[in-house]
Image (cartoon, rainbow, N blue to C red; front, side):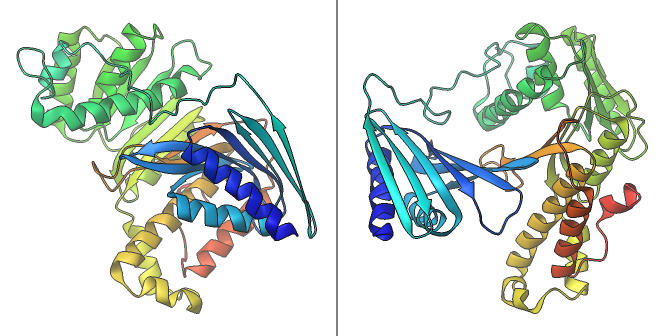
Length: 391
């Protein structure tokens, strides 16, 4: 019976998860309702002390990561193997198991292995922070360390966040082909990311870069430039101005962390207009789309999801960022959306990473159709970024 075979495969996954012998799980042969989904990779992580399955959904032009507790994950895996995926490959430290489904017929093949070790996940490894030297002048100027160069107790979370941001952004910057990439941080604020990223690239990775922080508050610009000079960071500078008025021509990377509402779209547009190799934004305050969802006529079946304010807010966030990802794809970028810091630090913790990829063949009409369908479903007249792009 196919059901018994599916349960046998799921039982093997569950046992490997519990015994910490899971190496990898891959699902392929997708034939479900999402035309751009190619496959799923699954691994085990430990987040906030809880063991979870981490699913990476590989789409044609983007990856989406979702972490799920065991009951939810196994339930979704059961649905996937029953209706959506024709094949799966499970690798453990003790055996490999392949799953193949042809209609109602399921075939399993198990092969014993030896000498294989389970990989350490990022969440399980002892953290090797990119920034280990805490005696830097900028860390004291930013209030991270005291005069003794020791990280302050009330700044431990902020220091962890800074290290996490460098851990994410440094490899993305290092992958840019330019000899000395020009990085523009839109809405830089105090420049936590700018100082840490410049320090790491220049003094740890030996990767010269120019970092420019754009900030509308003159006092923060003055303070940032003074601290950069005191730190000997010749390639780091701060300039006054708004995101939409800044000329980003020549930027290899455009970054915006928590730029409020449509300011995130301004940053995305500037990156697209500059032809930046990398655009990375952590959105905040999704007001523009929420107002349209409230005033418009969403599909009636969504009433139960949108009648409560908190659910409406979350749906507005999801719809806004989905449209941003699609508009980036339409502009020639491969996108990923993932959680980049714990929601214990900030609920605004989703990061959209877009990398220019001329090799990716896109069906422009298909993407435009997806955008139109999302807008129609949620009663949206126009996304602000569409206007900036002239769509």
